[in-house]
Amino acid sequence: MYALWGKAALDRGVAALVLVLGAPIFALLVLAVLLALGRPILFRQRRAGRHGVPFTLIKFRSMREGPAPDAARLGCVGLWLRASGLDELPQMINILRGEMSLVGPRPLPCAYTPLFSALEAERLRVKPGLFGLAQARGRNALRWSRRLACDVEYVRQPPEFTTDIKLVMACAALLLRGHGATMPGHATSARLDDMLAQGAAPGLPGHKG
Image 1 (cartoon, helix red, strand yellow):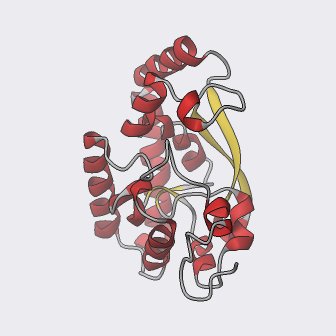
Image 2 (cartoon, rainbow, N blue to C red):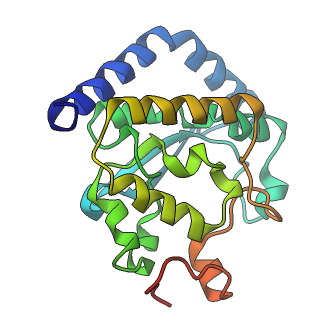
């Protein structure tokens, strides 16, 4: 029952509730981004959804615009937004639209899709999520190979309400501590294609490249 309609109903119900009750928080975050970084307030990027179908992901912008490295474009507000995960809150709109779920593999840029092995591509069988197994186990601090393996592990399990709740709670605990926002040696997270080009992210068996 949860897999058939319960998960989708929970997604939309929680998203609607957060958007309504969290309106004052959203307003404060908009003001913080506006004062620290200016316009635009939101960052939009095409990401791969279920079955690889592209959609436009929405986040609060956390970096100054320009060609400088990520570390140079991240200010105090941007660092705080990323560490707390509050930059991801606008994705409640994506969830309400049915493009994302509360729990599932994180949506990745469409350019990454051709890089997946057949096994890694299984992550695209479900809707991407705001929270996920990889996030519960370390967020961006995990190597790409580990993140993708966690995604496949989640997808291969039948959807269960208790599993999803436990993952949300584990992710919330990490966010409250501000852990896992960055990959070691990087201001945010290294790009998957860059890591593959350097031979640093072999991924799962049969990985392309």
